[in-house]
Image 1 (spheres, rainbow, N blue to C red):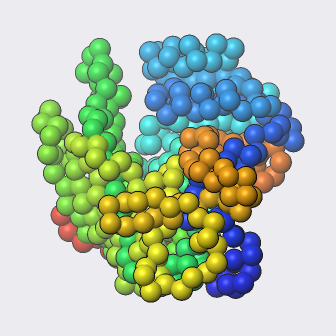
Image 2 (cartoon, rainbow, N blue to C red; image 1 turned 90 degrees about the vertical axis):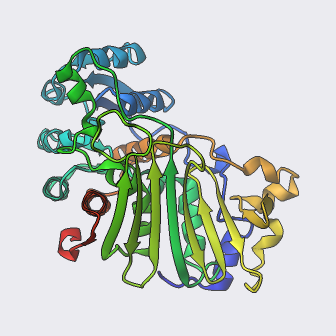
Length: 408
C-alpha cells in the first residue's frame, strides 16, 4: 500500500474513523445529476426489485423499462415500476434508443449474453456481481467492457460504500501498519430455494442450487467480500483451500449450505472465510488485523481497535467509542471535529442509505457526469475468478492454485 505522510494524514482526517458512519450531508450527494438518465432493469428477481426501489429514491433518473423472461417476476417488477414498459426479451429493451443505461440483475450464468448485447447496443451497463459463473465468461465480459467507450460498472458494493472508502485510508496508514491476518464471514438463515409451479420453472428459478451453474457460497457471497481484501491490499490470493457440507437443508440439494475457506496471499497473510445458509449469528463482516490496530467492517458500520502499544496519532480525541466485550472500538466519524463542537458526535453513526444505493448512485454519476467507475469489469473479473476457484476448492476438498494469468 502507498505510504501516507503522518502529519498530512492527521490534518486531513482529524475526527474521521475507521469504523465510520457518514451523515447524509457527508455521504454521496443526493443532488441532481448533471444530466437526466433513462434506464432499464433486466431481471426482476429479488435483486432487480431492490434496484428498482433504489432508483425510485434518486433524482433525475427515469426507469423507462423492465424485463424478465419469467412472467411472475415481470409482474412483480411491474407492480413496483408502473410507468415502465415491460419486456420478456432484453433485446427488445436494448433496441430502444431512448434508454441510456441498463442494470443487469439476471442469474449469474446469464450475465455474459446480456452484457455483450448491451455493450453492442451502445448502452451504459451496471452488472450485478459476481460477474459470471465461469472463468471464460468473466474474461469475455471484461474484454467486451474494455473495448467499449461506455460506462461499465459491476456491483461489488464495498468500493462505492463511504464507510469502506474512509476505512481504506486508515488501512493505508500507520494507524494499522503491517497486516497480520484477515477474516470474513457471512451468515444468514435462508434456503436459497424458490417455490415453483412445475419442475422446469423450479430448475430455472433455483439456479444457485444447480451444480452445473452455481459458484456456491464462495462465488455468490464470498467474492463480494474477497473483493474488499483485494481492494485494500492491492493483491490477490495465490491459492485457496476449502471444505463444505450440508448442515441443515437436507432437501436433495448437492450444493453445500455451509463452507470454510483459507486463502493465502503473496505476503504470507491468510484470509479465513466462512459462510452458511443455516444460521444467522454474526451477519456479514470483514476483519483486518494489523500491527497497530484492527479494522472491522460490517457494511453500514465500521470500527477500529487500537493495540495497547500503538502510538497516538492525534485524531483519537474526537472519536466516538463503543464497547465490544473486553475491547473498545473507535467508531470514527467523518466530520467528527465539527460534530463534536456541536455536541452531535453520535449522530454521525451509521450509513443513511443501503450499500446498494451507493452503488446505483455512483453508476449514475459516472453515466451523467463522467465520474470514475467504482468497480470496473476488470477488477470484478478478478474477484469473480477468485470466487470460482474457491468454489472448486470446496467441491473438491483440495487446495486450488490461482493462476495469476487468469487475473490479468
